[in-house]
Amino acid sequence: MEPPREDLEEKIKRAQDDFEVISDLREKMKLLEAHVSQRKEALDEEIEEKLHEAIQNGRDSLERIAENIEPKLEIHINERLEVIQKQMDRFKEDNVEAVREHLEKSRPEFMEELMEKADASLDEKLRAGHDGLKASVKLELKKEMEEAAALEREAMNKKIALATALAGATTVVGVGIVITKLLS
Image 1 (cartoon, rainbow, N blue to C red):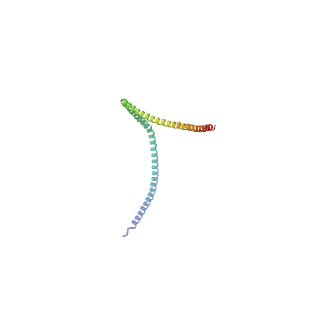
Image 2 (image 1 turned 135 degrees about the horizontal axis):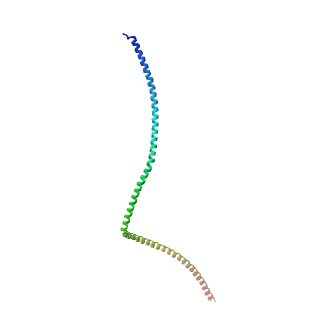
């Protein structure tokens, strides 16, 4: 049995209508996809701009916070430093006083020890000075004695030369006298 032609035409008509609806839906879907894609890009750009703006606002806020906090922080730090400085001054004063008391108590012993060390140092320096002076005087005397001996040798050599010359002259004169007496 063959389906009635009207039924078939009706089915074809419905299929064509459905096809047109599907084609329309497909076109609308393509348009919707394009619109969604464009909107997504626009939203992405807007989000990026908003993020940059929020980051910049955050930086500005941090700068303002830092500007507001910095003086307060500096004041707080200075106050703490003053407290620490006062504590250090008190500690120093206490230590100076303790050292002063200790020195007062141990002053006689300390002075005695200091005097012993000074005496030992003075003795050592006197010995070293005496030895140095002695060596210097010996060297100076030796030098002067050598110079005096050299001058004396020179004078003796001159006297010996003169005596030798006189002896020679005397011998010549004596021989001359002897010869004259012998001849006379």
